[in-house]
Image (cartoon, rainbow, N blue to C red; front, top):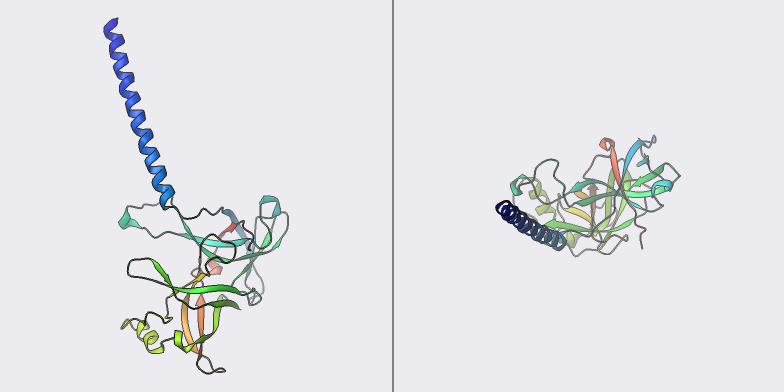
Length: 248
């Protein structure tokens, strides 16, 4: 009947208006995501088959090789970090945009397996890094001190020959005791160590570790050694993620 036809037309018009509203909302959310997301990094998940049997050598065998997109000198990350939590409405199993914690690089590749050399390996090539501190506004501030990181074995890393100008021993000691903070330009325990901007062929600096301790050099006057530890215990790792980018 005419009445039924009019009712059906009204229902279709209502549903069409709802679909347009949903489409506009999806477009707004896509634009919001595009405005705030970090540079996209393709990640290849890989299972760890075994850690190196030699105790002082830090490497791992992963179940992913050249036949599945892994190449020599690809970078390897472990955990995925974001700067939001429960207070911001996050819950388990929600999809997230992530930051990567860099662990090392692919050193050897076979069709089905690859060997990953961790930055803590004593034979790992040096990488250029910077020390960063999280400011009161929650954003990291990179200290103006060019330096490089080398492995010491057994999960340890170090930055050598740091000028005394960048170390405030009294402030570092008090920071351990929870008293006065270190001066703005000084390196203190707990600071982050990140890859140098524009280095390693990565689109943005990534966290490598954190400052575990500082020690005055016994060989060279007025210099200090900064000991760096990874954010992740390599012996507890089960999964890694390969970033298929060849460094510049």
